Image (tube, rainbow, N blue to C red; front, side, top):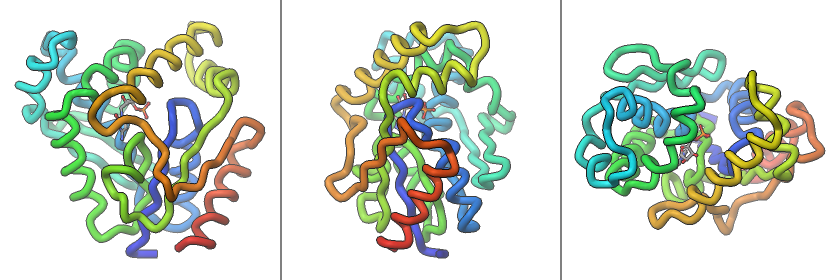
Length: 218
Ligand code: C5P
């Protein structure tokens, strides 16, 4: 399994993170959360008051923050300029702002290069929006996770406090539209990906299904 790369793409709330970590754990592989990288850059820019309505301002600082990603599926980590940012990148402010930052080509170019470097010779499960289409189009296993809008909003609401399903559903719809309509590397299913609808599945069932796909393809 050393050389194996499993690309896991899909919209927010489709169950990518839990499933990707579970699959990596089951097979003794590393795990990379590429969304955490876009969130980390977004958090750094918010902290510094960068105008996120101005793509040029974002592009001008795209290379400044230094990221360090930990790829242990039991304890994935993200550090920005040497400081742990795992909690800071999960706030609603970062979630609301991340799509504006991830649409900027200079940000994507930088992070795609870093993601390829981390993937290296493989042995890793990578989750994101453009992993099977752009980051590692040669990956032997590509899974595209989906779920109904209601199921995705319910899952996200259960993870958070002080929000409602309706609020989450609207926020996710907005983010998915931005992510799938941007010009550079939009959220899309690779032609050779296996689509997996997780609406009626629990986490164990999703992991089992992905492991079955890996057995068949890898
Ligand atoms: O997966 P997560 O919800 O943490 O991703 C946060 C955001 O990062 C997405 O909404 C998207 O804008 C961006 N992203 C991306 N490409 C990836 C992973 C995430 O553009 N490969």
